[in-house]
Image 1 (cartoon, one colour):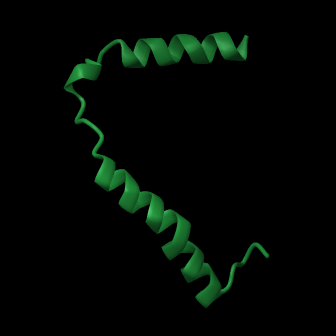
Image 2 (cartoon, one colour):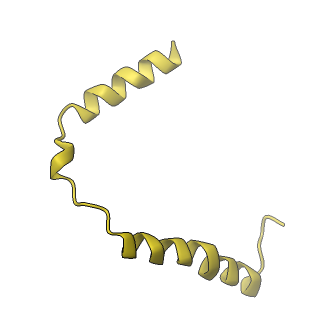
Length: 53
């Protein structure tokens, strides 16, 4: 039942949007964000300590 409810909610919310009007993803932006997540954040955790370790 939870999956069905979630699916119906997603359909209802997305039905009001035209996917063709969303801004296109830019490969350069995706690469910069991927690099940031893969290196910069890891470096910060190393410098300041990871509270989850």
